[in-house]
Length: 338
Ligand code: KG4
Ligand code: ZN
Image (cartoon, rainbow, N blue to C red; front, top):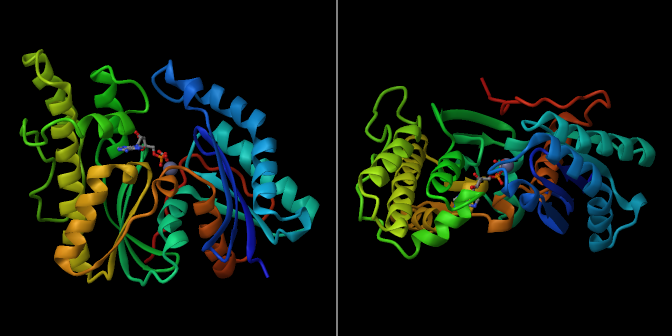
């Protein structure tokens, strides 16, 4: 009962739908990106995003069902991201999911987008053992989370200013590399020297209450100042050195946290987890520390609906169906234990 879930994700600029069984078996995962429509504005334009979701949602859901090879009456529950995200975008997915749940007479499951990112790793690692420490790094969030059990999270730290992905996007914009910045910097950094410029490692040496807090705005300013002072600097070296500073802080804090809480594994999630340097440093750090690295495939790191279906499966088991009057909550937070 409730094993085959159709999930819809429309929190930002991807229209996505997926059919997943028992939180681990991905029957289909369709993502229609709107990047082309927003690129010329240098960021996501909310009004354009919600209109594009309205256009794309029905074909994307239809494609997810066809690809999965399941008929409407073989879906056991319909899930949607209810927040955090852009309200106009969220409402498109939430309304559609509720309508389908009503028509098909199956449970509706409201999913927190951040919880979806946390569950992306479970899609590909069904034997993932808890407790783990999860680093969730996306365009809007940088969270270090102690996941004690399913649905039981403790927040160890978060960013006090920019999110890690936001730092990638802002630095890329400043360097004239376009939007979104993460993938471009990732590619360019491969041609540069990560030790060329010693950029600051924000809050790396903190030992008190804020030891797991992050800060990236000083790093962004340091990049701007360096390039203004050295106009002939190699952009690839700037990209590589900037990326090295971000990755260094993320990996160092995550492994300290894993040691402190006795985690069995270190899980990566969120769009920035698609970063090549972060992925390889993550695995190396875990090998050195004798714990398991869980690094979802790139497609599962960036926004998709399969991770929403995985989180929905666990939520349905713990909380049951969500009421059909559940609305969209743009600033929804991760539900924390204790
Ligand atoms: O999780 P996501 O797809 O959307 C949000 O929920 O924010 O994350 C998007 C963020 C953007 O800031 C993008 O620049 C960043 O993830 N990103 C990357 C890479 N691919 C995407 N950052 C660094 N390296 C990448 N390869
Ligand atoms: Zn996301």
